Amino acid sequence: MARVLIVEDEEALSLLLRYNLEAEGYEVEVCSRGDDADTRLREAPPDLLVLDWMLPGLSGIELCRRLRTRAETERLPIIMLTARGEESERIRGLATGADDYVVKPFSTPELMARVRAMLRRARPELVSSLLRAGDLELDRETHRVRRGGREIHLGPTEFRLLEYLMQSPGRVFSREQLLDGVWGMDVYVDERTVDVHVGRLRKAINRTRDRDPIRTVRGSGYAFDDQFASAAVGG
Image (cartoon, rainbow, N blue to C red; front, side, top):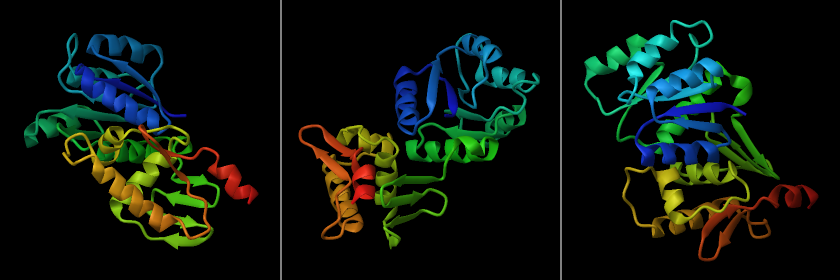
């Protein structure tokens, strides 16, 4: 399991990032101060660092510079978050040692994709490109979905929705949580949009006699059936 450290002083944003990263199966720790993060990173470096530019105690840019001078963290993958969008500031962040640069407000699904891509390059053994459950298979790299060997054609939103649910089998997500995780925190759409796309997803992946892996939890939301894998294999 890949370990991710988030260094961010905006509590709402750090909670959102933690929730989405844990939903993808990562072990997540959060720091709100740059100096506290510096101490934590000396003790046990994570597999990836999500680092805000502006922090109390020690700035993100200075923390990044320090990390690149130490042997144990000189190759640590770092994604820098900032509200600064000017080209000169992006160049400065990358020149200091950040591997990637994301400007706020950003799309949560895009950031999750960047985290996966960076970990795949740095620690490929920790990130699987394939999600499998029973006779259903989702390939993150090729964006292909198969069921029982049959290729299923999904739109980009249905693909992200299936991927999000498959990452956490048995976990019930509210419509609001799915909107944040699949559509992104900066996109404003009605919660009923989730129902529409779940319906499209079900129509695409289920034939007449197929078992439906998407479970509707009345009054709560949706989940990927954690018993689907064994039931599908067992017949």
